[in-house]
Amino acid sequence: MSTLKVTNIQATGETASRAVSGVAAAWMNMNGTGTIGLRDSSNTSSISDRGTGLYTQSFTSNMANSNYAGSGSAQDTDGDDDGRNRMQVTNPANASSAYVNTFDTDGSADDVAYVTSIIHGDLA
Image 1 (tube, helix red, strand yellow):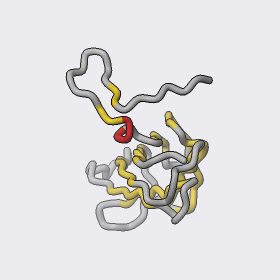
Image 2 (image 1 turned 90 degrees about the vertical axis):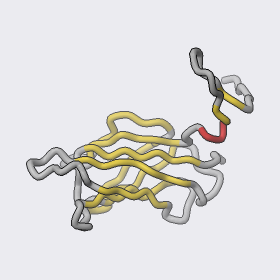
Image 3 (image 1 turned 180 degrees about the vertical axis):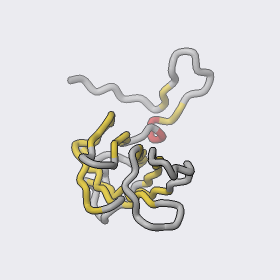
Image 4 (image 1 turned 90 degrees about the horizontal axis):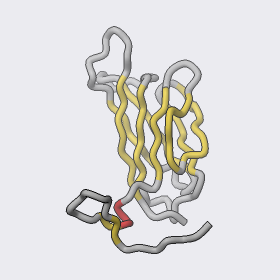
């Protein structure tokens, strides 16, 4: 495999370029109910269920350190779906995985059908 080294990326048809450091280091879209599973992902080797609304996203390639940033979204499909599920991505003080946690609007942990996370940071 060859390595292409660039400072900026610009897609065909775009007028602005993006710094390579701004490209997501990892992301995932998963089913967080029943038997959890990845729908699609990049740099995500696996997901684990740590309990109601608590998941671990493990990276294929580690982050350079544990100071990365994460964001994402959560939405349930049950009858009381108000579209306001909350989620958080936190690091468990290591570079190989992130905690992805989902909550109902009342603050209680909740398994939800659609969970996404986006991780930004430097890869090791």
